[in-house]
Length: 452
Image (cartoon, rainbow, N blue to C red; front, side, top):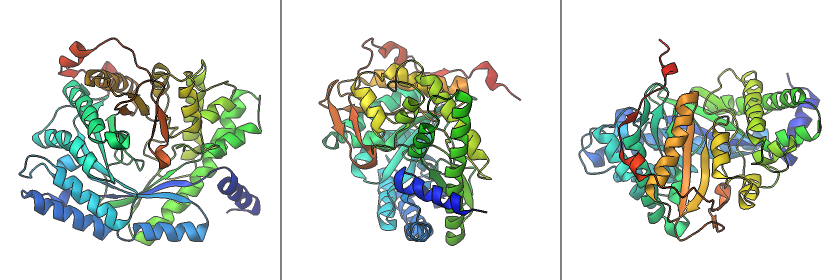
């Protein structure tokens, strides 16, 4: 039972420390929408999403008003469209993306995720159509997010898919160049993707999920930063314990919102994702949390160790507060969406190599990183391959969300707006890797994948 002190502490977190529920995401299965006729399939997709999610935004607003807890986003995730559209006759799946976009607009949500394919061991005809459709789909829609899973610990890395995704990212950047490559901010390449992630742009409703469910993503790096200020200079044991206690409080709020939304919408509660998701606002930064541990600037030596402690402590505290924890659950390091990361990258202290190292211990990976617009597609594919290897070998989720900034060079900045923030264009290594990417095939799974 909550006492008066708990209530006052929570109110202070909300009012002064940027605590919020980052998203309520409704997952919807579209497996029964498959049809040989592409337009009929698109119509079924639109109808089912609108029918299922018509009360999602209104319910979220009611909970926000009644409980006084900010709920920043209301979103939808759907079955990977490559699966739904597999039997459709047609050259591409852009009409299905347009149906998703219309449904999202009708429901009033911020984003809809699931224009996705799972190709970690190989590609079907439908998978190939979806990947080929990504650039046009993201350039013609406002709300649609896309993801492709190119590797896993059990299957290895599909290097043919990695090559295609380098091409898709470059094409998407070009088609959305007037919006500073905004399409690429809505495109994620995964290894070990999870089926219940409520965060965009990588959310999709996995095939092991129920017909419909509610997943909630919490936030709160500002709350953790505030808590660490009170123990300045104390040993790391105390730091870890403080983060765990704070994560527990944050997750309890997420659990409450998830249960309320589930009950009011009449759909099962799925999971609470514990991830610390930053914003460009001052005081809401994962980088500043790491610096509070004693680093002069995020990206200097010691950053990876500090992030490992943070990620682990968040998980340990959060799992005690909710019966169902899932998604990515940890700490996000999206450069453009984190005020401290932006500052560190702009000063040259946070480099692409350091971000890659941090990937081994954080929730995702090379996230919301802008690179020069003339970066060739094989270099982008090689970055994806590096991230995939870290995920595959360490049995964790890794991801790449990279933005080739057309017409921009190192030192420039692109503005993406809202929660997507602004991204300094970061330098990359100049050694070429066309021959490496051109080999294709599959990088085999590691020995420790054989667990049966």
